[in-house]
Amino acid sequence: MREKEVRAKWLEEVEKLWPIAKGSVREVKKKCNRKGCKACAAGEKHTAWLMTFYQDGKQSSRHVPIPMLETVKTALENGRKLEALMVQTGLDFIKSGKEK
Ligand SMILES: [Zn+2]
Image (cartoon, rainbow, N blue to C red; front, side):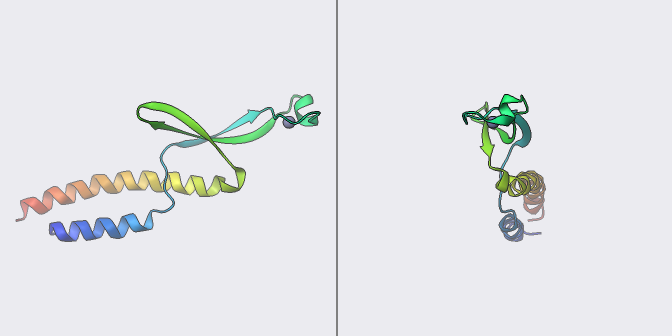
């Protein structure tokens, strides 16, 4: 592959990787703020989802609304695909230079 083709293939593949995110999701049990919540009073708590990620070297997390959970999981999977794609594209790029 020539460099031009490596670039075109990269852009074509990246286009498909949407939505995208990097990190991981996990389930947590939390108390809520509602007064007189029966679940909290019974010690059951509530299920919530957090996306954990690193930004500028620091670990952080964000609440993921349950209706968005499956989409966020897809985004994380796409993030892993992007990293693999970047590795392969780098190899193809180097190879294109050798073929000149
Ligand atoms: Zn509650």
